[in-house]
Length: 421
Ligand SMILES: [Zn+2]
Ligand SMILES: [Zn+2]
Image 1: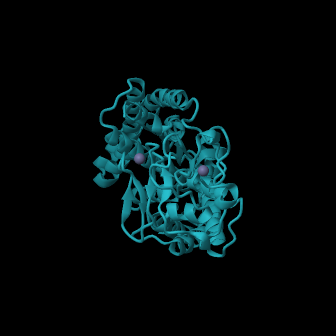
Image 2: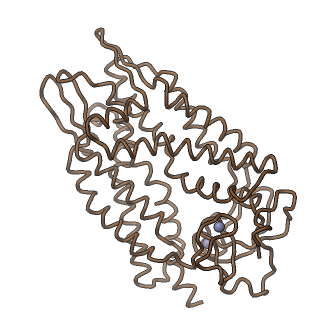
Image 3: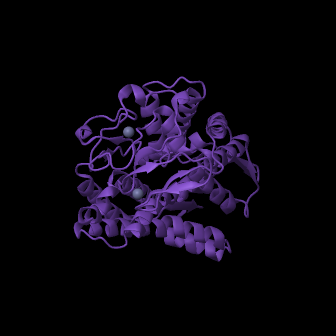
């Protein structure tokens, strides 16, 4: 079993011997060999434990540093410029947040500032520091907790989702007025693509191994029987470690996270209350020559269909209307499974949970479109775009559903099968 010292052992002590790992999805304690290519899946839930093909810590470090470097100009420089009939309007990322704030949308402005500006900088700053410490043999006690936070911020830092909002905003304007993409816009495109490339090249399991090598064991030694897997870094710990801090990542270790079912259920209930509000109230209010028109999610989709922008209409329908509902329904399926102690379709449930975790962040695309779009149309009573009450409801819906899946301990779904086995 890994001790505190062993947990922070530097890279040269790595051994090719199989290591013990606790599956983050189903809690199965299993031996995982080190592989050079291909991928390994969990013997119980079939979730991917490790993917090697196309992954390298050096490539991930290069992508992470490049993303971090591009995020600064993407935040500070011009995103879009519109000029027509002598009027010039410019859009910056911070100006979008500032316009939301000045119009009194404090919650929306704060969440956008966190998801589009603060979290990406923090995530890529932490990831670069962790990978640099591994590269230069400077792994210390701070590295594990820093990497855990970096992993946690992965879904909450959204340059890639912002890029989708940017593309939608540009596509809505381009047919009607000449739009110029500024330096910040190109840097945003680069940063968002590099964000996806960083995810594709980064081998998390290898990073954890370099931070602290887990214990090795042979089957039958007894350690597998009631050992606990850390839900932060999948390190296998003895049963006595329950309630203490993981020596590798610093997260408090629980056999099952206390109160996770009730917390997640309350958040999903809040999601069900917010969903009709997000759909019934207008997402944006457009003022044109003194007259005001509100646009709900559904009417926005229909307007895009009428303007022959069918792909955009499909994207907004799926991300803003379809995904939140699918996520709420999927979480209810998991809750019912735990409540009824069901042992059926467990692999499908594990896949549903992984999908739910991954896709819900994309529902923010429509909000980010408005952040890009609003600073370009601020001409007082002549022409003006403002948020409607549906926008904070949609944003709160995304936040509560992401919190629900993040706080739900999915290992509970597998407990009935484990008990019967
Ligand atoms: Zn598993
Ligand atoms: Zn841990």
